[in-house]
Length: 476
Image (tube, rainbow, N blue to C red; front, side, top):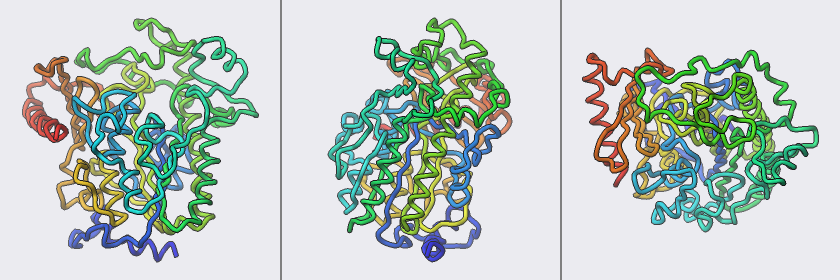
C-alpha cells in the first residue's frame, strides 16, 4: 500500500529532484490521494545538528532513519531567529517586516489578524486541527483556528524535575542551565508524546482528515534531559566550537551578549564575562543530550503512526523554528544573523514514501504553508508569501536562484547557495550602519566578512539590490 501511495507522488518527487529535466511538472494537487492527514512536528531551538545533516557528534538514529525515506532540505532558513516571530511567520506564511513578527513573544493573531493561520485554513477545508505542545509560541495565539483548545502540559517552561532544582525555583531562583534528569523524571515533552500518541488513535477513528501539530520543547534552554541521553555522549568528543571569536571585520551590530543564557544561575551574569570553558563543554553536552532525547520521542511518534496504518495516508513535516549558537563566534542562544542562528532542519515525508531524497535549493520556512496546501489539493490563501516547493524546488526553475530572507531587529539577511549578506540599519531604518558578506562556498562558518573588500563590491551591490526587493515584498 505504501508503495502504491508513493507512486501517486512520483511526479512531485521528480520535480523536486530533477532526475529527468524533460519531465513536465504537474501541479502537486493533481497527484495527491484524498484525504491526506498531516503530522506537523515542530522542535524548539533545533539547529541542523542531526546525523542526517552531517553532524559527526549528534546521536539521532530516529531522525536519520526518517530521513532515509523523506525529502531532506539542506538549505532551509527561518524568517526570524527567535521563537514567537518565527512560528507566527510559519503559521501565516508571511515574512517579517517592521510591523510584524519581531520578538520572541510575537503573536500571529496580533501582528497579522487578517491572515488565517495554516491550522485555521485547513480547518475551514474540512480538517480536524489539533495542537499539542508548542506550535505557536503563545498557546492561546490564534486559538480559535484550531478544532480543539490548544493543549500544553501544565508546566513552567524550565520544567526542572530534580528536587534540588525545583527547590531553587520555589524559592524564587532561576535555576541552572542544565539538568541530568533522574530515573523518575517525566518532562513536558514526555507528556506531549503521550497525548499525541493518544490523539493519533482517536483521530484515526474520525471521518475527517486531521492536522496534528506536535511541538516538542527541547532542546530549548534549560538543557534538561534524562541522564541516559547524557550518557550517550562523550563530552570530550563534542568539544568546543571551532570558531570561538567574532568574524574578522564583523560590525558590532552582529554581536550580542546572549542574555537568554545569562539568566541562569550558573552562567556569568556580567555581559563582559565569557562562559567558562568548563561550562561551555557542559552546555554543548547538554544540547546534544536534549537532541538525542527528542530524537527518541520522535521515534516513538513515528512508530505509532506506522503501527496504526496511518503512514500510508499521512504527510509528515518536521522542522526547527530557528538555529542556535553553541559558542560559534563566541555567541550562545539565537538572536543573530549568522547561518548558525538562521539555518534549520526541514524534512518532509510524503504518504507512502520509501526513498529519501535530498534537496539543495534554498527554501524558507514560509514555504511550508503553500507547500502543504498544494500537497493536500487545497487552494492557498492569497496572503501567503512563500512558494510551493513541489513546483519551485526544481533545477530548471527559478528555485535555485531564489534567495532566503531573514530578519532580526535591525539586521536583514539574504541567503543564497553561495553567499550570505546582511545589512544592519539604525532604529529609524534611514541609514545602513553595518554590513556582512560571507562567501559560503569558501567560508561556510562565516569567519571572514568580505563586505568591504574591493573584489567583492560587485556581488555586494547585487545582493543589496536583491535584499531591497525582498524587503519591499515583505511589506506587502
